[in-house]
Image (cartoon, rainbow, N blue to C red; front, side, top):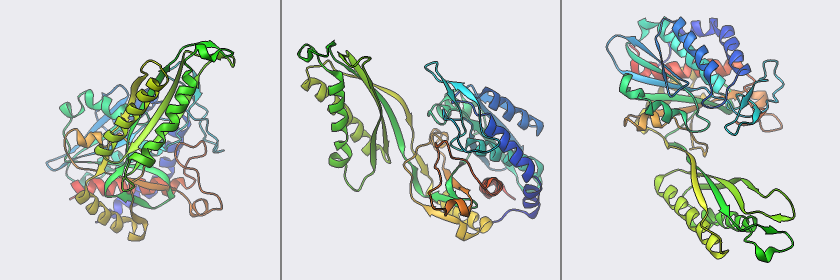
Length: 410
């Protein structure tokens, strides 16, 4: 299957306007679960297409495009930015600021390409509305907040998304990344890792730095915990499995000659299956508790900050998409890829109602950038943004339309 000529012509004719929309979204990112202006802009553009919009999960926006009897499918785009100071040098670079949960102010950037996702999603809705002669059924457009913190999908689902909106038979989504512009990358089966984030508070006993014998030093204790945690992957997980345990922050004390009464560190854990996840989490708790006992300290507090669910591409649906993507974009530009250790909450939309889904990636870099002397910046970098915006957006739109129309096209 490939797109109708009328769709390709429309995409080409609208490309300058599409790029302008992208640049507007790029200039004005908002932090996770704070996407009020972004949501308002999305809703206004959807309403301008004659669609009713519905709010879920605070700043999530949903529109249902109905076109007679037929299959029901859903397409999801995420909308939040990141606390990053942009350094791309583009004239449409973000200068936006936001407020973090702790009250501090930060620069904000669409450093993971969600501006691209919004633009592609709105274009998909536009072409489905304008070309109803080419398809039949129902398409649910989901614009999800809070992907970066793992909050958004769950917030929308807990707010009754599938209780009040037509339930789809399949869910589609995609993500821009540092691949070649014009190319699609799809994994079959496990597509992305599950992720857990934990905060550990270590309690000690404060004393003067000159009298360590009167203390229980939470910094030394925390250091032993962190060092021992690194042995979980190397010594307790089979080499046939994937797991990553990363300690990303460690804070303790206020003055160099005071042994503090507490310290805190945060972990991020990535796994590909539930069995390995359970083992890793069990070993983390065992090590942390045992090290505290060995130091004569109270049992530490281990708190779950957030969790990303699995992202498992339905194999049969993936095979079908590989075929139609190849027909539309060219087989040499569609790649069956390996799972990535990044995480997404997209899978919750399908897993919650037990329907298949597929999530794929599309490249954002020109050949000159991709094949340059230095590797191009990846997602979550202050330097990340597509340098071939037209090809990136055009590919994302064509891929989204091809996927959706493979289910509802006439």
